[in-house]
Length: 239
Image (cartoon, rainbow, N blue to C red; front, top):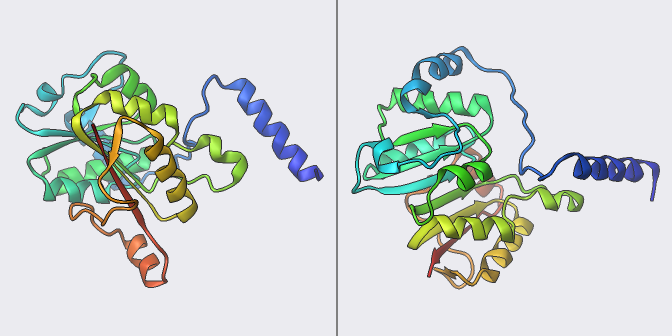
């Protein structure tokens, strides 16, 4: 092992010892634009959800009981979440993201498009699921383009792991769905293997699904497709 690899291994080992649970993200906050900062100040009181270790009443949160409730995990800068909420006005979306600029960006889109079917929470989604989302309360979960952590030594950081999928299953209603999309083929293969191994889930396709109409193409995805890069959608339902 060369010196660089030894250093990286020592850093990884130290991190394992210093954290009780490896998080699926690294907090890179970046700079807020004036619009994002203003949206955080004016939009979060209306559309934001503060983390607290107590169960949410999703029907009360969205002021309606007859809508499907969908969890969006890691929405980035929020463009896709906002577009899906426009396309599916009869569904309500609890959108979780840890990065402040992305939270501000989605709140800005919510205000600009007068969307009432999105609520935003800025917190680690694993803790949100454990402590705030009731069992059997979700109709769907969206995980679009999660960090693939492509270096092998970082695979332990990947969000899609057997334990996390089992947690998601406890929160889905019978017949509820899990939709994962990625533009990394190796990660797609990883995700497909993990989901296929979960006995509670059933694949809606033979392997990879046709992109559902509600998921819009992002500008990065469009660019990638033009360059011949692939995108893989996986849609599984709870038995």
